[in-house]
Length: 270
Picture 1 (cartoon, rainbow, N blue to C red):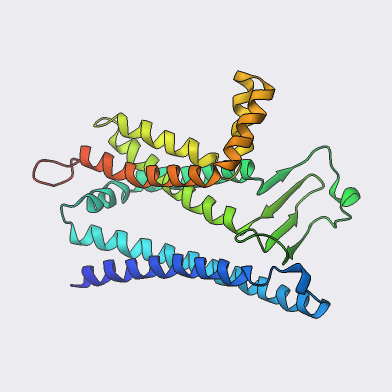
Picture 2 (cartoon, helix red, strand yellow):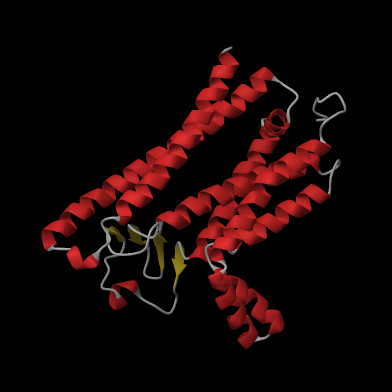
């Protein structure tokens, strides 16, 4: 009974977290009409921007706690469904280390290709932007849904951070899924080689979500600069489709691999 409550509470926390993030984006978008802004309104939006990130962090915390409770509940109930097999495979110390290493490594890579982590050796921030080094601020206005408020941080004269809410959410979701897939694939390698290949496809597509032009740059090495630019523009138009393709792949792959690891009686091979 206690395990069932843990699983149920975990699901609720996950749903609440994602719903809260969606509501945050929608509410904040209402304050992005530049024509209605006055100096006093900007000050108010600045305060709202700080609250936005406090609430966003709290939402991520709820999701993380929900995932932990759900995962632990599945382990304790030890049923024979695919979700339990996934939980069993990823609960050991080796899998957790692989997950953390992949989550952090892929997160850094995603930050680079999405422009979250900025490196501009040809630009001196203090000269070109008049920035103090180190320093940071929140830009509260104005932009499209999910792209404001931005957090700008100058770490050195050439390295900085540009945190965009939608990129941050995508980075955490895709990095988590890639980490989960990798930890399962390593454990399942001797049972299924096809699962790891599908995970790789999802990871590559996920990398292009936040920066379609990076895909064009990559392909331009093989098909020529002009064609690469054209391809990058096409990918930019298909950004939503890339998201729609990569995340379902990364969600489905653990269950595909889990099937390979389930005995005829439903128990886990590992």
